[in-house]
Length: 126
Image 1 (cartoon, rainbow, N blue to C red):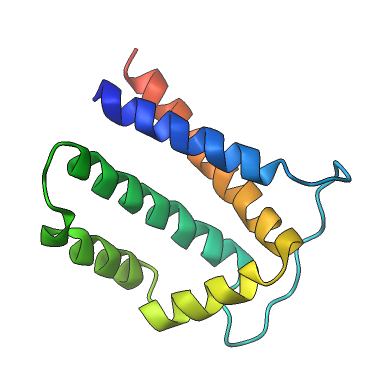
Image 2 (cartoon, rainbow, N blue to C red; image 1 turned 90 degrees about the vertical axis):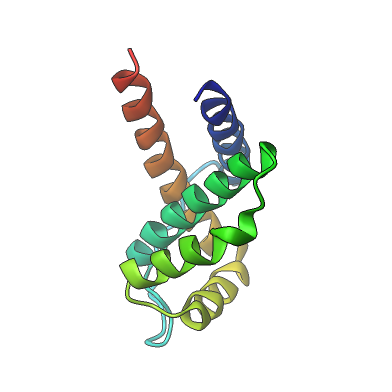
């Protein structure tokens, strides 16, 4: 469990670094999205689950368990939970990544949520 917590911390630190790359120091406003793009709040929810799934896969890979056995299941569970397709996710991710500021806003919110989850895990382990 400690190794998974360390991996999660490293992941959070790298996301914090990326989210802090706003040269002006202030957070830009959220932007409206086109109809065929997943809205900001839902995209944050999906990305939180996506990164938790990615971390789970990395954790098992570290111990020699081949992730092909369950990685497809993890991703399909995420798509089902959020009632989206992989294509919708890919299209929306492409939309958000075209604009650095837009992606920064999304990942700032993802980071806040992951930090909150980390705090919950830490407090429940004490």
